[in-house]
Image 1 (cartoon, rainbow, N blue to C red):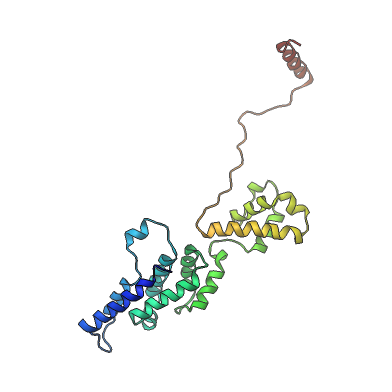
Image 2 (image 1 turned 45 degrees about the vertical axis):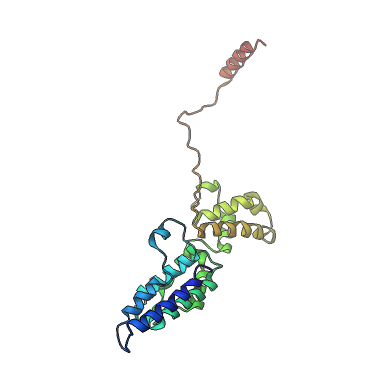
Length: 238
């Protein structure tokens, strides 16, 4: 939050300079306003590329995408530099409980599904559907899948790797034999932890089962068993 506060002061100074040096008449192109808005809250590109996306970066990115996707609506809603900076600060304060990756994914989903610039309420609803944005089934669907998946578990075609790891963490025997009232909360806890990791950017992979040996083992007959036992006794001086 502290990173965006100075932007309001910068926006105010830019607005004062532009109004005193090169006033914009009514009906004039908004290019001057747009160029100033581009300077507001836009981090240096090298700075962004060299570190993980944080909440301020995420808000800057989604506003840039909104401007491109909803060009006329965007410039009508944020015609003034100060309005854009204040809107970013307001959105940031409402989106801090979601991960930056979840915010960016929600923006892409909204842009692909809505014709109009979203309100903060509509955008929060998109963030709340966060698991869907990353291919994660609901906790109920995941629980049913984990309980009904056949063995060997690692070879099952899971809807998402998080379901497998949540089931393994809860315990396959536990899920198969305990009542849902006892098993579901345990599974839910592990699954939600894994969902947070996935939404934060972690990739889960299920370890491949061990390959079969090239050497084919066969059962020894009685004569061979006796011969091996005799050799073993001889080697051990029995």
